[in-house]
View 1 (tube, rainbow, N blue to C red):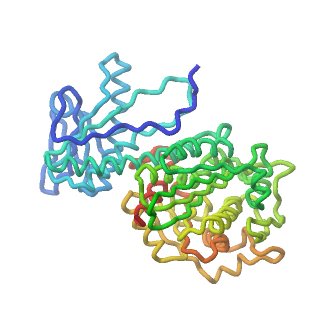
View 2: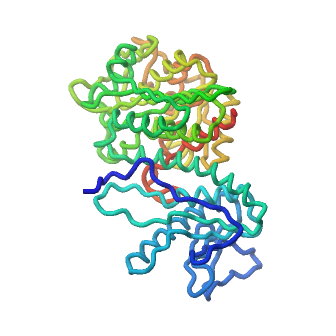
View 3: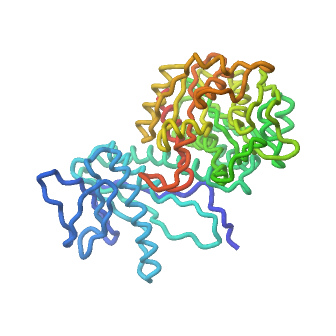
Length: 488
């Protein structure tokens, strides 16, 4: 019987750039929206608007589909590519179901004025728009295996080909982060996540993967990870990934929250929405996927990645509100709410990573607070940072790869709220939740340039938009890769 769990990582379609069409493969034509004084073009008697993301099947001869790129901005090309990928996959399945000949390659004809940035955005949409993850005994539906992007400029082919190769590595990072977060938690316990990370990321040249078990964590004093994972039958793990290229110009520490399922612990969550907590390790997934892509691109920057993985469960051995937990390095935390578990495991990993690996800068990524969903919605990540330069790098990296970030304040007036009475710091003080969570984490960063990325909103989606489909989005993986590239 076929394993119902999809393969990890997901296989993405191939993209080829050419200045010549291939006979027999269906063609999709990209068109911009006409100006106010221009008439909407017709294809086979079908009038099309050119609206970004609108894909129409054309009757009769000529192109099989026409896809709109709106006003021609790069983001519109990404939207068009994603919509086209979904449309052609649906058409392929329909053709197969009706007994027709299956096509597995589609040609995409670019407009005359297309530039490299448009090709990058289009490729992102084509690669990720058709992403699927389903745990089922049924055979997977057929999907397009390759896209042939057609340009009218022969001299542009080598440059476009290089750009598409870069985009493929970024898209592969997003897809892997989605795979890890989408995997159901009856499969994905801390040991599974650690083993999969070591297998997939550790297979890249230059990456060393080490998995630390609960015995090692106890010996080293990882009190936060052990407290959070103490209520589960699945013991916690610490995933260490190191990429050390020769001649590295900088060293970044990436830390990702790896809570493989979050009940909230004794401060239990409401039943509504708890099933989505399989994605509570989306930050860790983004870090794992980013390291794989960084190594694949051979970026000349040293990267150390840590993912503290635990399952926050309810049992007689679960940690309690009112507990005092001692973290790696000795600092103590007063527990106020066991559902604020992400900062507990990140605190250990930050303290350990900084002391053990001595990086130049630190970035942590986590689905940390519901406050960020209220503040920024579901498509923008929250950015807190002690460094203006690092914050700018994150925002610019996100803009280059199509991920939006908004810098939030680290308001010093709230810093006193994090100070403890019985312990050194307070885990869940009153006040603005996103800010106080970031201020708590800052206590464990030893004054280094540090950025905290709260992706509680954009890490998962309940509807299709752009290159995103319902489920885990893989948000932050591309930003991390591009951020590291900015140090090259």
